[in-house]
Length: 525
Image (cartoon, helix red, strand yellow):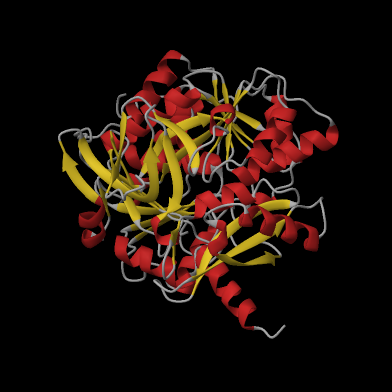
């Protein structure tokens, strides 16, 4: 696939009046933006950045929840050879400060609230020389350098913004920070050919036409480039799981969506709302879950509101290599160790490194979609990246196996293993079984104590409907007692609501959960 911005220009020339992006609203119908209008917005943004002093190679932190502004900002920066930096503003304050100090950005682009945070909290202080405000200006903040809003019925005029020299495939294109579910987020670098590789790999999952429902913002950046009409619902991106489900279902139905992409938290909202309203999503051909393993209960709930022949897939990957593989719900139920996440997609190679006698080792991935380095983290890059004949190999930090049929079996994060005195437990084996117990919404295995002497504790979050707490705990304990690894779990604790990552509301923050379990076990009974 060509450079992303060149591909977008080509689509605008071929299909100028087709809808590229549908902007969901909190209430009422969404706004449709054509390919021609979207490219015009990118050109206008590129011109605004150039006039503001943003230059090739400048790193520009991008913070906006508006899908149109996000798209035109990122692609406008790419068009002039600048480097968008994507980081979650809701990260813990110290983590966010560290991320921005590592990047040392020359520019900061965002909605007014992001700029207020920047000035009040000192984000990237001493680095940012250019500030661009998207949306409405805030009096006294600084002179406004607007990134234009989407305008109906307006098509581009004049030639596209051109660089004196188009970006080279191995030029730094974008920095995306990880979610921070396993420590301070790291900035994954993408070259222009990395972005093209991610787009090509994603296209193998979602196709290259039809209507795509983008349940989280990163998909919005690639959907139109792949040729999709991309529906961007009014998701609460600071807490996706708290989004009123009507904001999701209405644009999905009104725009006759073919493919739905979202995290388990967002997909759970969709499934629950449709079941409550007895609504069947008859137009949807495929649902793809990203961000965390798709458990059987949610898969069943999704199938219940889809056509019988519709697919539900669980995709596996990471910020550094997305996507890697995908598996249908039918194949995911196959018995085996851990959780089956499917075969690698075409162009992606997965291997197991440092495997033990049981075949479990660290999953490593090679392909055109693999980030070649972490920004300003040379020691982490050296520990996780190796140049091979097939390209850069990335150690994912995930434990797993690959079976004789080439399927990857996920066993959990390496850093989340419970290291006891005479045993090592990976999280996925225990949790996948516990999550099948009636009344369990989800579970999380954590270690209490020092590594090498840790006590294995299973935390359980109860479903909204089901048996009471004593019955659920007893059922989980009975299941564990029947499993060889279950005897090592010394306590089952019910938690009122797991802490999760900001981006997906699906990845469990096990460090915080382990701290909670430690305090609970110290309380007198």
